[in-house]
Amino acid sequence: MSSATGQPSRREQQRADTQAEIKTVARELLNEAGPDGISLRAIARRMGMSAPALYRYFPSLEALVTDLCVDLYAELRAFMLANADTRPEDDMIGRLLVVARSFREWSVANRTEFSLMFASLNEGAMIAPPHAGRAGLDPDAEPYRSLVRFSRVFCDMFNQVLKQTPAERGYSLATPTIPPLTPGLRAEVIECSRAMGLDTSIEYSYTFMSFWVRLYGLVTMEVFGQLPIVEQAAALLEAEIYVMAGQLGVDLARIPDLSSQ
Image (tube, rainbow, N blue to C red):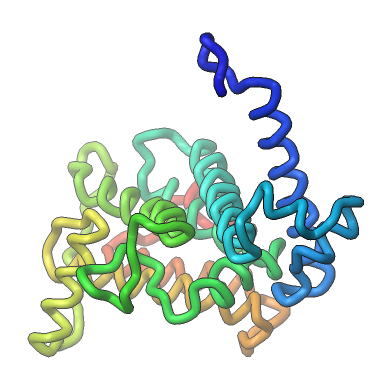
């Protein structure tokens, strides 16, 4: 029970510390042998505990992996936002670019964690809030809730870019040109866009979806060694960022402090 001051009791703190240690060991095993290397027996052996004793802290291996993924999404999100804070608060384009670069940086540096978060546990899941019935996923259930919280970093910043006036931004945005869309695709893009908090025109909604698919696809292919560009993967991302900015009428070459860092 928590103390009268709202602070955790000694027992609660000890439990939290042990849970944190269990997840630290699970992450070590993940990096040593991949997602399949995580087991309660292996964790217990490394910690000098019995496997049944771990059930006092996590009801199942699935619950442990879910909790670890929640931590990893939070770590990635914090990393992106901390880097974004190196830019002025009103420089929304700059902050968005930093977030995109930071997503790649963290993912490449934590390849096995990325695999657990985005491939093993969430296979087939869209990295965005689902509309009703999408793949039977519950947006309020973990780790999907944390995954949504991570993805919202991108759409929230994009939303803020759109809300700025040309005077606040320092330049005007162009209305992007989009390809012909079937009625069904148009409806789903709008539905997904609104679910993510982007209440904007189809042109910007589709463009955001296109940006996210391109960014996520590039990072995923690099992490899994499937990107044909190997030596210059970071430069490839910068080239794609340049193209994406151009779709919004932003010429990064004319904004020196937004060029490749």
